[in-house]
Every structure is written in structure tokens, then in C-alpha cells.
Image (cartoon, rainbow over all chains, first blue to last red; front, side, top):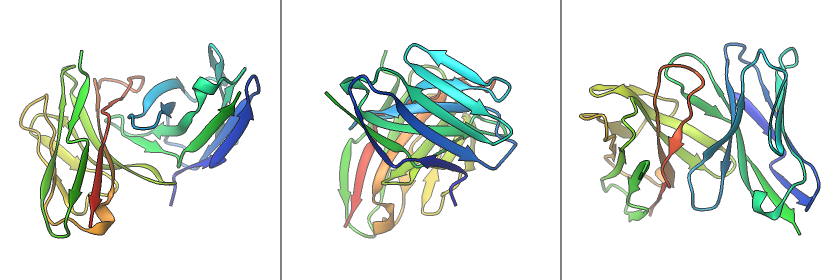
Length: 112
Length: 114
């Protein structure tokens, strides 16, 4: 069973639009929530991350919104660009040793 | 600065064969990990290591073995390859010492077992 549930599986957005990817979790022991971006043929790379004591974090066009009571968090990509086309994974860390628990991934395609 | 390097990039194995996936990092990171990525499933943790000589099982360890004799290297061994081990394998490292530390991934090894 997926400890971090991610939706949608795939997303098509027009250039300049907003891309929204949602994740939900059950384990309240999770205490760090990173998002990873993966281009075809490459390994995932850290995009942005948030701690559960913060409700929002913004870095450029990328924003994480975090709702601790609902155990949900989401990634918003503003002014989406074709270069943002990639697979996005939400993840969570709990316990020691920074082990990542990944969502199933969202394949984003931004059309020009 | 090479980061995390995995070899080979691609491999085809026959059922029952063995192989070792190599992973090395040059960032002097304490923590290293092996994940497998299957379509629609995200990445699953196979094994991890928090330092030379220390390894532990992750979520999906069956059919795999690891060793960590040096800080730099963390090879993954498949002893009797099975079709269920067809996947893309990623090695990652993390400096350790706190939650807010970034994991760095290699470029992956695409393995097909036929």
C-alpha cells in the first residue's frame, strides 16, 4: 500500500497555466516533505521541500502548500513552461536516516 | 564534481544470472541508498547504509544484497535474477545529520531480466 498517495497520474497544462499536484499521507510521524523532479533518463533531483510546521513555501514559480490537519500537501507550478515537463514525485521522511517514501509520481506535460 | 555515479547504465540479464550494480559517490556522504523505480509505483527503498560497514533493509530487500566497505562505494548484488527484478535502479546519497538534507541521485541503471 502506498504510504504517500499522489494525484493525478498525469497532467497536461498549457504554457503559462498553473500545474497542481496533490499528495496525502496517513503517518503522522512524517516530518519532512520534499518534492523531486525527474527528467527522462535522469535521476530525481530535489525541487523544493517543506516542514510540517510551515503552511506554505515558495521558491520562484514553485510553491508547496501544506495542510497538517488534513494530512495533505500540494505543489503549485505557476506560469508553467515547456521546460517544466517532467515527472514529479512527492515524498516524506520519517524516522532516522532520511529514508524517502515516495508517491507514485505525476507525469506533467506543458504544451506550448 | 561527479556526484553519484552508477554503472552500468543498461543491462540485460537472463533468469538465474547474477550481477552487481555499482554505485560510487565523491561527496563524502555518510548515507547511501538503493531504490528501484517501477512504472506507476514511484521509487521503493531496497537497502540503505549509514556508514562503512553498516547496512539495513528497506521496503523491498528480497532478492538483493549490499555491502559498504568504504564511504564512497555501495554496490547492489542480484544473486539469482528474476523477471520481477526488471526495473530502473537508482543509487542515492545524503550527507546525513538532520532532516533538511538533500538526497542526490545517480542517473540510474535500467535492468531487464529475460
